[in-house]
Amino acid sequence: MNIGNRLLQLRIRCQLSQKKLAIKTGLTQQVISAYENGSRTPGLENLKKISDATGGSLNWLVAGSGKVFLNKEMMEV
Image (cartoon, rainbow, N blue to C red; front, top):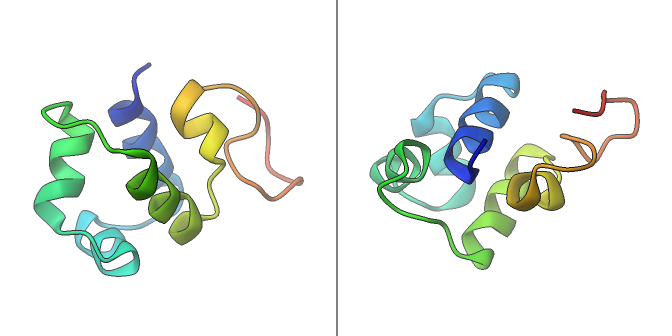
């Protein structure tokens, strides 16, 4: 699974639309869409914004390992 797929999965688990995630991160909906469909790759700064906005693990977004969420009660992938 690539970063775009993990981002999509995280966004859906958080029950956020692309528009709502864009607002929470300060990015545009078009950028979120491009990340999810793989036409653009997010840099570390934007991955951090997404992680902060969702409570998602930066490590999981980047590498696909560890817990999906920073909250210890969430299941590991």
